[in-house]
Length: 338
Length: 81
Image (spheres, rainbow over the protein chains, first blue to last red):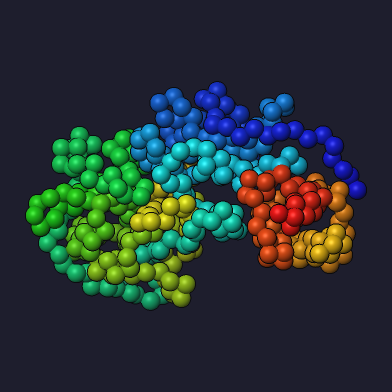
């Protein structure tokens, strides 16, 4: 039996910008991402948003975890991504990183979606809430589907409310019509910077941002979608919703209009926190394990299977999370193969 | 519960987690000796031992329990409290 004698202390700390190359190299065996990717997702005002575990004497990286913030408040909401730890005998593991983030970095919440199912036990052990995201979809009535596999055509009639969707062309236009502070109590809170960065300044995807105008003419909610045009068809993924859940129930008719106008094969929505009744009123069907249809999630590369997405949060009260959160809508094709 | 009882329970736990009834461990056994002993396996070991002994490990110490001996000593320490 080999008894390891040499051990070193692993120091967990927030990364500096100068650590970026080492972090990129460390993660490259699992996720060969470009420098541009890190700059977009994990560098805020010159600060690299990562926590690392580093050998005190060797300076070897033993593990890293990326942080994505949803607002620029002093005490923010963190979403985790790119968590990777090398097996070692120094008393350092993924719990060391998560525990540091949750307990040493002041935050309103720590959460993530896209957690590997077998890793859920780590978060459960730490006392966090875990689960599977709900997946809802709305099908177009077509004879043939190019992307989805439809063995049973399922439709739900939308409740036609008098709420309207207004397509917003620029962040400046959104700023004139929408008060970002009204959702400050949301968990997590997405501020103006976050919405601009994710959905107007994305270097990877083109998003469609809509304001929901209610019957009083007030703009209280935002819904964000991404079209995917491929395989001779167009589908639409709802990636974010910011505002009052109940307003979703009244936009079914408007979503049906968008489906027709844009000839979407289907529209789908991964979410946590939105009541199923609200989604049903908006004309969505929940994809359950018994569902005979396949509504693909991955397009880069395209994989024609149903995909469950798992999440965790250390602050489950009124918690919401969507596909646009963490790095779930990341551009997989941007992986650097060098 | 004496030292032998604790060691027997740890051995049974390791055999269950690593699905190897012939696995032999000692206090010197560490994470290098068992390839599958990663952070996920560590959590499973801890959860089973918590159930077995009716104890609660300190989350901050979990990472440092990288040898069977360290786990053994921690269980004894918790039982003394």
